[in-house]
Length: 193
Image (cartoon, rainbow, N blue to C red; front, side):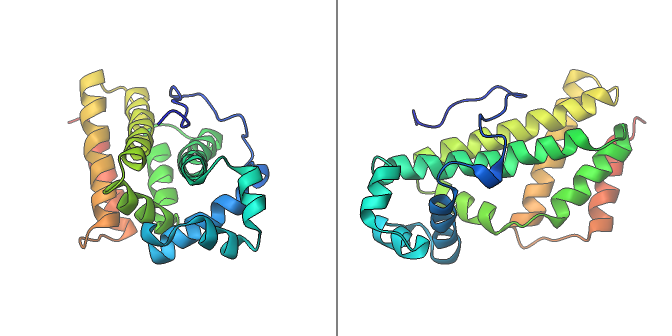
């Protein structure tokens, strides 16, 4: 997956601005197809049809479908990871209050793109690798939140893994919980007794 640049936690994509992200209309057209019809429906023709553009325009913007798909994964990382981290970095508060704000933001986020990418990752090694980067970055960020709350490195890692996997499980399985229950779970993980 050479076209998906590995970022260290804390690094930001050069764009920093989703509204002006390169080839955004093309990328969002593909994500819409992926979300509504699945990966089997994603082709240069369907992308062009959805974007209202010509194949020649696609070829000017991308060096083939594979390069396009890498661009989709990079955009999704920027949108669903780095943009949320930037949002969280702007929130004031510490410790448990900060974690509660994070849980509320996650609970109200649109999940359809994530479900589509996770489904794609089940069958595609490159998408799986990109998803692993997303999960790793989110987990590292959450570990940092627990570390700032005064937990040891080991406790921070364990609590972050429990929280992250429970959030993923609640969102992407048939098990559900209200926002109040999610906040209660997060508060439980903040306790030091």
